[in-house]
Each structure stands twice: as C-alpha cells, then as structure tokens.
Amino acid sequence: MTGRTANCPNCGAPVLFIWSGAVQTTCAYCQSVLVRHDVDLMRVGTVGDVPPDASPIQRGATGRWRNRGFTVVGRIVYEHARGAWSEWHLRFDDGKGGWLSDAQLEWAVTELVEPTPALPRDPLGQGRGIMRGMTLQHGGEMYTVTSVTRARYRGVEGELPFVYWDKAEVPFADLRTPSARFATIDYSEDPPLFFAGEFVTFESLQLGGLREFEGWPLPR
Image (tube, rainbow, N blue to C red; front, side, top):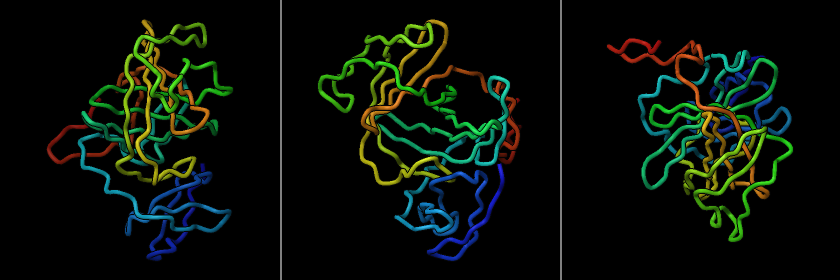
C-alpha cells in the first residue's frame, strides 16, 4: 500500500491516498467527491456531512483479522428509519478488500464473495421480496435472513473501491448463523452482491491508530 498525493480539482488542496488503487475519494477541505480517471481526479459532487459519532475507528487505523493486517482507508455512513451505521473500507496487506461494520457497538468483518452464490429468491426485485426467515447455504453454513433494511447513504469519506455518492435508498438483507457467521446481501447492484464474514469483538481486531477523545481512555 503506497501513499500518494494529488490536488483537489475544486479547491487545490492536497488529497492523500492511503490506498493507491482507490476509485473514489473525498477532499477533506472542500468536501468534494472525487472520482479517479487514470492519473486525473474529477469532481462529481459534494459529499453529505458525515454525522458526528463516538466511534474510535478512523481512516488510517490499522488492525488484524484472520491473521491478516489491514488499514482503514474509507467509510460509508448509512441511515435508515431507526438509526445509522458505518461501513469502514479495509485494505488488507495481501491486496484484498473488506468491510468493518460498526453498528451500535456490534462489529462484523465481511468480504465480497465471488462468484456470487445462489441468493434467496426475490420475486419483487430490489430486495422487496426478501423476507425474514429465508435461508441461504454458503461455505458449509446455513444462513438465515434476520433483517431487511432500506437505507440510504448519509455521507462518505476517504477511499472506496467504487463510485458511491448519489445513490438513493438501497435494501440490505442481513443474515446470521448459529455459529456467529454474518453476511449481507447488498441490492445496490444488479445482480446483488453477497458479503460474508463473522461477528468480531473489538479487542480481537488488535486496532491501532484509533481516534482519541479528550478525557476518554482508548478502548483495549
């Protein structure tokens, strides 16, 4: 992973890439959403303000999962009728990507599964036909749909592996197994995407470079 710097085409401020393969990033100064075309950056819009939160995770933090080191390089904040959560974009030392879900102190790490397994039938399309209790078998585990949430992005920051800034409400189906495996079906694409991983404890991630709050000790 090699850090590179470019200049924002809107305000001229330096834009530091922690992950050189990023497709999209944001300018920390003028909040422009910047899409990368070869060596050029193009402004495609302005990011919504990332809502204030008390998460200790921040861009540049490092950690480990399944014996692989990772760096946090970006984030998507989603909001829905009952709250919000963050999906932190991870880049592993082996060059692969992943996501750390940060939802009210419940943590899960997932990776995109390719090729996509046969997903629960969705007769109405866009996740509208997905119901709680549907099942999916993957990797020797039986997953059960435990929730279906329609959410929209509230804000983005840092580096993402795709262009993501102007999408409307998107359905997500969360699945779990009795052995604490976790998966999500993301209906922002057609065909939908399947991410699988597991619930983790904060301590197990061996995180470093965390955000500090005055008067608060860092989590251990």
